[in-house]
Length: 234
Image 1: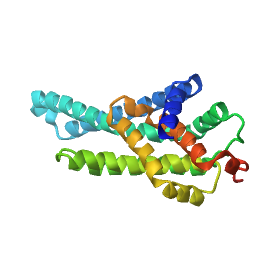
Image 2 (image 1 turned 90 degrees about the vertical axis):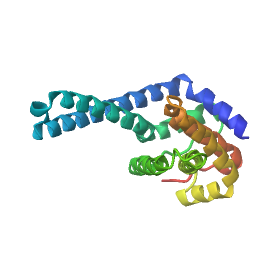
Image 3 (image 1 turned 180 degrees about the horizontal axis):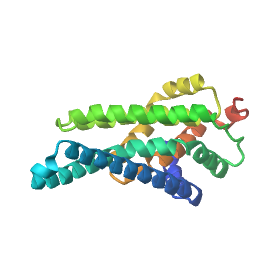
Image 4 (image 1 turned 120 degrees about the vertical axis):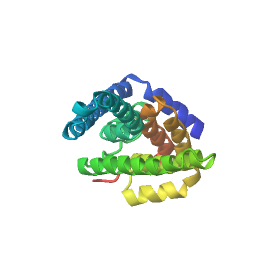
């Protein structure tokens, strides 16, 4: 079941409709990162000017500026997956609808989340992902334990958020959460697959769209088509 769902999700991720959403979300993500980098570098320059470092130690000033710029680049590269998840979160309902329409054309379509709920989910998930990954980063370099913590935390978070988001298009949120717990082994296995993608640079940017496509397929297969005859009204 997981292999079939993952294969279908990968195909959908590179299909023209989802590819358009991918480019849109990546463009917004890069735009936000550039704005953050520019803002932070201006803060570094203002700090140096306020302490008169440029006048007293011009060589040290230049060195500090470039070191700070490199440090900010590393930090923003680390934040990129979380920011891409936040940005892509606003498009995931559209992506789920595309997957349902193209891969399950004979099934009734799901109902999108209200805009406020979708925004809350996107911001909450991005925030929790960032906090968990920052905590995991502290022990990342501890042999075995660090990598296991990073992998396990992301697997759980990705499984929980993406499955419930896909399921909530057809059932109330409490029921979606209960369904995830009922099929914990299968949903967590899917989360492990997504977590593996998160570890790989560049590939981790595909995680949001791949994840929602994967969970749409997994939810359909776990539910059975008869149970999806009447999506829950909003």
